[in-house]
Every structure is written in structure tokens, then in C-alpha cells.
View 1 (cartoon, helix red, strand yellow):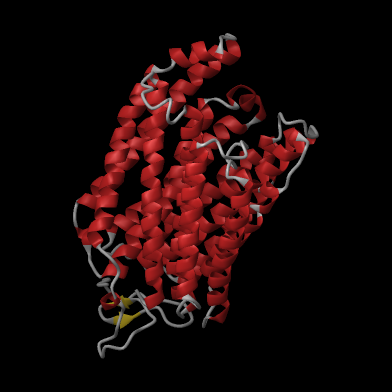
View 2 (view 1 turned 90 degrees about the vertical axis):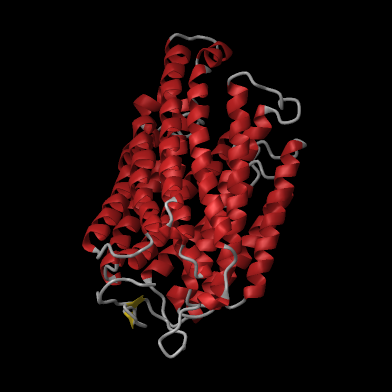
Length: 475
């Protein structure tokens, strides 16, 4: 690491791993419920497990994004965070909000709005927490020696994510109005501004891992930002088909939903192209696998599978079925979970000074988790298609259909077990790295701290952000 304050990122990553583990536990509770094993049903009903599972997904990803920002922004701005103390205050308050929310769900203390179940009083604490985070990040960026495109895109994504949380806090008596603005949070986050966050992190990692010139990589970012806003914002219309809004949204949503895969295709081409242009000599292959994998899997999960069921002619039948779960699981995994794990895999050796990426354990974590989630996606897809046919075409009763497709959840649980073993290995590696240390701060041959990226002892990234290829990476 280049700056001492980057150590803050480690503790966000640690909280992120804890919350991810809890999300997996509640996923298994729902999976067992689906096949009739309901020993915990009286304590944790299915609706509680579902609310905890989906909200933990959002919280652990946001925690990972914040950790990534606390690592990336000092390096991009070339200065320490403006306040390490307040960064830790923000972390603790975020953890408190998460714990209180999860406990409250078990006592049916929530708003009951899908994906936005968090109680209203905690909404205000979330806003304060995010404002504090933005103050630290933006203050560091604009007081720094430089403002790179990578840092600006990442910060813009984080800023708009905070801004778009507000519409979900507005109270409406009309169900139509409430649903209209609820999708501003749910859709414009995951298919809009979160893509900017992903793009910023992806750009940073490719600069570090491939050795390709910063200017080349950041030009791609402009393309990604343009495609994201072109398709993602108006693509929100595919959620408006059936909630009572004007019929024009049927046309707008259909057209721009079809364009949404382009942003993810651009990311996939971007990552693969930069990898092919680079030296391919960075020793941290695990971080590189997670980075390239994120771009490719996000195109399949968020792009192709999203396109497959959001067109009006298809969504008429698939809306609200397990086909949606198929798309959601693979999309979130590829677009956001994998990029967070990529960032952690890159940052940990630099924060701790320990090169555990040279072991085979991290690579096993990558393959087991990816094969497992792919199997889960296929199981959801097969179950979803069967559900659509029996419910929407044959007009069979909902609960009868759920009983008929329960066998697919046995397959899903087997694949989920493989996925969990992979994530378990990743977390074990995380723990084995240990805590960050000041000894990991980069220094030159005279023992002075440097603001560059070293190859064969030479700094190749200067204060302007340009780089040269000078040999094999030996970080």
C-alpha cells in the first residue's frame, strides 16, 4: 500500500465478509424451506429469511464498495484520507445499523416494501452514515494532487447511489406512486449507478494488474458511462409494465431494456481487451481472474439473462417467477460480488505484505464458487421455466406448482454447498492474511515512501498517472 490510511479498507472488507457469510446462511434456510425441511420455520419464517437474505446482499456489497473506495481514492488522489477517525466512526455506525435492522426483521419490525424493508427511523441513520462517507471520500479526492477519471467515475457512482436512496424514503398513499419511486432505488442502483462503481473499480484493477496505459483504459470508461446512462435510466421502464403507469413505458422499457446488455458487453470487451494488451506478468493471478471473470459473468448474468426475460412479450409470463431469481443471482454475482472479491484479492497482499496469492487455495475458491453459482443459476432457470408453464399457461395453483418444482431446489442446494465451500476458502484466506501492517507501506531503495507502481525497482506510474512498461512486476 502507498498510504497508511488505506488500512481502513481492511476493516470494511472484514465486515463485508461477515455479512456475506450471514447472507449465505439465510439462503440455506430458504433453500431447506423449499424442499420441506422447516425445522426453523417457527423461529425464522420464510418471509423473514428472505428479507434478511436480500437486504444483507445490499449491505455487504455497499460495505465492499466503501472499502474499495477507501483503498482506491487515496492512491488515485495521492494523499492520505482527510480523516481516518471519522472513517472508523462511519464503519461502526454502518455495522450498528445493519445489526439493528436484522434483529428488527426477526420481530417483524420493517416497512414491508420489497427490497426496502429497513425501518424508517433507520433510513435517516443510513443517510447520515452515507453523507459522512461521501464527505471523507470527496474531501480526499478534491484535496488530492490529482483527480483521475477512474476516481471521478467511482465517486460519481457512490454519490448518485446516495442521492437515489432518497426517493425510497418518500411516503405515498398511492401504491402506484410508491412503486414508481421505489424502482428509482431498486433499479437505478443495480442497473444504473452501481455500474459506474463497478466500472471505476474495474478500471483501477486493470491499470494495476495489466500494465496498460491509464489513458487507454480510462477512455473505455467514457463509453461505459455513456451506455449505462443511455440504457439503464430509461430501462427502468420494464418495471413499470404492470403497476398502473402510462402505456408509453411499455414501449420505452422494452426498447431500452434491449439495450442494457450493451453496457455489460462493453465492460466484458474492455476487460478482455486490456488483458490481451497488457504484459500479463502481474504475480497476483487470483485478483486478475476475479477481475476478468467479473466482466464476463456480468455480461452473461446481467446482460443476456436480463435481456432474456425483461422484454414485454416474455416478461408477461416470467415476471415474479423463479426466472427472475435466476437472472438476479447470476447478475449480482458477476457484476458486483465478483468485483468486490477482486478488489479484496488485490488489496490484501498490499495491505498486509503477505503474498498468499501464490497458494492454490485462492484459485480453488474462485473455481468452486463460480461453478457452484452457475449450477444454482441453471437450477433456478429450470425451476422457473417449469413454474411459468404450469402457473401462467396451465393455470395451476401456486402452492401445487411449488411442490412440483421442489426437486430442483435439491439440485440448487447441492450447487449452493459447492459455492459455499468456495466462499469459505476465500474467507479462510482472508483470515490467514492477518491484519494490515505499516511494514507493507511501499518505499524506494533509500527507504522513502513512493507514490508509484514498482517494476524491477523502478516507479512506472508518475504523478500525472501515465505509465510505461519496464519489465516484470515484482510488487
